[in-house]
Length: 130
Image (tube, rainbow, N blue to C red; front, side, top):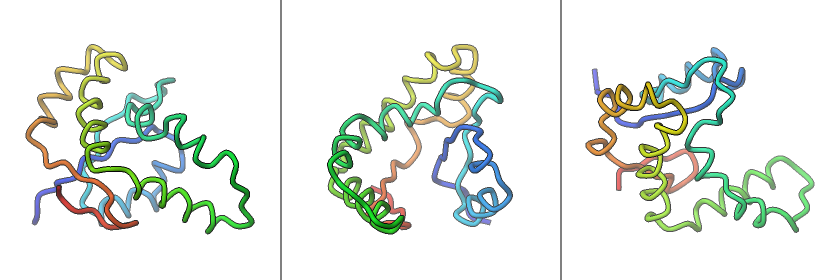
């Protein structure tokens, strides 16, 4: 069986932990990074991936369908340079102490962020190593 190569961290929102979501993540062979149950903190990636610039990008636009929102959001992320994603992944490791200091060392050791292959979304739904 192939080893999982993509680390995936999300908060514990019901839509993220549903059976359908878990089955899809397993099919994609993503390795889940634990998020403390009942934590009021956002997943650390939210601080970097969804900044005010995305809000500004979408602010003046008007949409008539969900498909238009999805297409515009994908265009935003596709327009970002690979270095944007690399920096966000590097910052993720440093955010753990502020979210859960007691778990920071355990997470660093378990997931060894520096040794993992960085990935970014090149095309919607397609993950490729950098």
